[in-house]
Image (cartoon, rainbow, N blue to C red; front, side, top):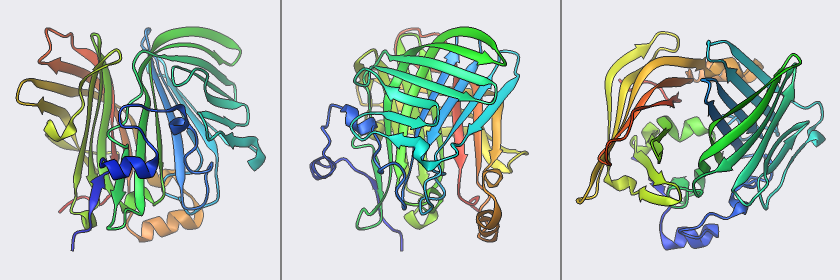
Length: 357
């Protein structure tokens, strides 16, 4: 029997979660899990594409999303890719648990010397990373208003006990950064993005896979996702869709979106089916808009068993888990609003479940 899964969007859902329907408050980007209590996980994500062609991703974790029952394991990951394709990756873990803190009333996460902090009511953030010869000091200034799809919570099960939550605190912003590698500092500017996820159940027990992407096309900010729940939830799908121009929301009703994934192939490095072309078509009866991603290359392919060790890895193998993360770059286009230029974009495929037979 299929179990229920749904996006929280009723007036009762908003009231129970203490959320306003049209406004995001700074406390929503603060810790929602008490900083990593057992039975939960949480992360704050930042990415930037610099004008010179480099890209930067920094993520602050309370623990891996596949281990909500574990004790807190605060760590920060950094991945910098130069325009030439050279990669610098680091993982920082503090020596003491006391070197981790996270505020509840706004985003202020500190892991050793690393900082992810809201300095202006969801309008300006500082993201700072330092470890093993690399320092990144980044300022992100929002050019849009924060956004979530309805309450931002997907509920699973008849009692709504299990959930996965998402908030796009900065759907788009301008970035300035100073990055030092082995004593040599370079300054960068570009566009950036910040979102925040948390939940209370092993993510692979509720979600099968998802595509997520973002782009800045002309004056427009694009966020798209398509999520498949696990088999026991009937592979229930959840589209997420935003087109904004500055603070103005152009389209966000995901129930009016048709998703298509074309040109399927199997990625040899992970064995997972993926697609070269993704299309999100929005039609509200008065206007039809289409966002299309076209893959040019894969920039990160990561079998998730590489991130676990010891008995946890053994148990994952015995259960048949072989999840994988993929990140792609290519082009994104927007049809239906004037003559918008095609632009570069990045998107991801998180594959958690077993392939459908």
